Image (cartoon, rainbow, N blue to C red):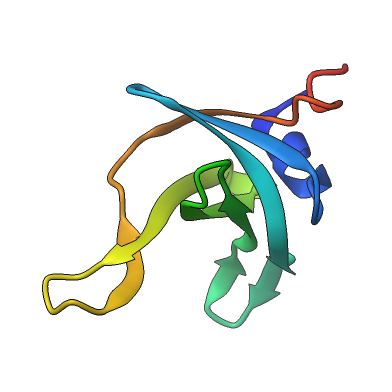
Length: 110
């Protein structure tokens, strides 16, 4: 199963593992947002699947997965909810490269 198939199949309450070069995040999806790829007057617009994930230590993450099959555009960004220098809370880029996304309760089945 590809990352894209795994990501698009994940729904609220599903378990998820996000593997990066430095660590593996394990958590539960608590919110999903999805927009399908479209063809507009500006050209192909990638689809986006956004998963909001909470970990056992109550850290919050946002995984943004953009995809468009026709020209093999896939990109994943990982944000963490945390303190900004001003003391407010906001989504902060982790700059971690997402290497693999797995649903341990069924995402690895071919």
